[in-house]
Amino acid sequence: MSFFKKIFSKEKKEKLDEGLEKSKTDFFGKLSKAVAGKSKVDESVLDDLEEILVSSDVGVATTIKIIDRIEERVARDKYLGTEELNLILREEIAGLLSESENGELESLELPEGKKPYVIMVVGVNGVGKTTTIGKLANQYKLKGKKVVLGAGDTFRAAAVDQLQIWADRVGVSIVKQKMGSDPASVAFDTVQSAIKQEADVVILDTAGRLHNKVNLMNELSKIKRVMQKVTPDVPDEVLLVLDGSTGQNAFEQAKQFTAATEVTALAITKLDGTAKGGVVIGISDQFKIPVKYIGVGEGVEDLQIFNKYEFVDSFFSNKS
Ligand SMILES: Nc1nc2c(ncn2[C@@H]2O[C@H](COP(=O)(O)OP(=O)(O)OP(=O)(O)O)[C@@H](O)[C@H]2O)c(=O)[nH]1
Ligand SMILES: [Mg+2]
Image 1 (cartoon, rainbow, N blue to C red):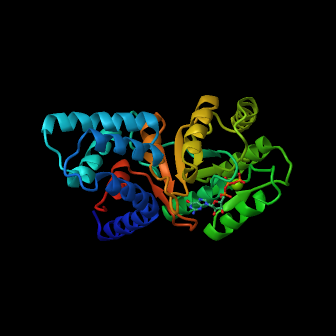
Image 2: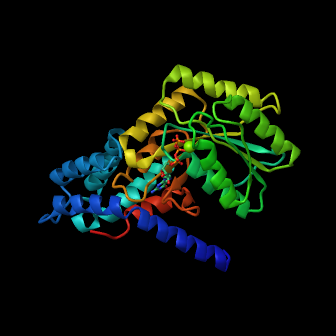
Image 3: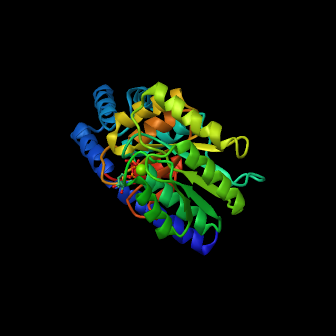
């Protein structure tokens, strides 16, 4: 690993630690209350732990799996001290996530012969789609890739301007039409322009909408169909953005969207300043679609490529 890579990873880890601070304080506050005066992990500690995991937005199904694993371990090891609980949680959750079917992704790698690589970004209102697009464009740009943004949110007055601001900030080009125009037509123009410019990546913004299945399906499939008139097999990626600070709502949105349309990757935003960071553990356990990015702040550099192990390590690093 190069010197700079190490520095970058250290900064990334620090930012992640910082972003998860609230979730951790909340979780470990509850945990230390639950184990106060107890030296051993017993039935009642496990009961409390179960409640704490659920209330930390890990989700019921994943919590049950975690508790089962710890129960097995208690049975096997006979004696487990409460002071080891952090470590055990970290090990068991990391083990659990390594078994989930969504592989780790080399997130910014672009497949050979796919030019432009087209990413369509979807999700409900206000989850952080446009911001994530800006941050992602920046990361590709830093890798020397030519990026074109498509202002496919033609629904809201300020949406195009907001994407334009990001395009200017990051220094990438943007294709847009006036408010109210057909998003599929914007998608068409964007892909066409990207081909002409020999761009590497297209990132298409879409309007945030409530997850009304039928409308969503219709609109997203129309955008796809129209883009495919320019070049076949696009989009290469459908990135669903979820707001982590909404906890179980994010879970619900992931369920609805993945059922309604073909989502290939997830981004979970706003993990900074929330106590609901546990939702990432539940989502990466429960969905076959990989979490590719996490948002840990509003700044251009606050998008991280998600790594399960790093995340669990940050979440359960010594704090009690
Ligand atoms: N703290 C924090 N704020 C974020 C993050 N990502 C996005 N935001 C903020 O969330 C708000 C909404 O972000 P947008 O990017 O406009 O969300 P959107 O999904 O495009 O919203 P619509 O276009 O209205 O559907 C903005 O104020 C962003 O700065 C994050 O990771 N952390
Ligand atoms: Mg937007």
